[in-house]
Image (cartoon, rainbow, N blue to C red; front, side, top):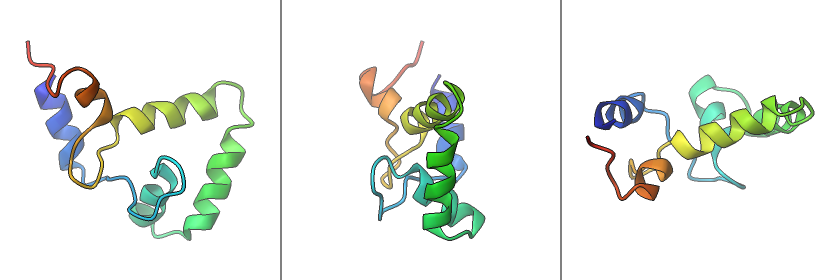
Length: 83
């Protein structure tokens, strides 16, 4: 599992420093070059899709690294999931 978390960190995708909730929309806006409020609006619109919008956001929230590179799901399991 360590390789998976290292691969996620190596993508360069991080939660935005000027976040409102989880920072996912800010990160998407930064990586795509779109306006952050447009991306936030699109994320909110995706919540209208049953399960898919909120589910995708929650998955992204638990696997997206913070600015310092820590990943919430990795931290929940004691910092490492090595076997």
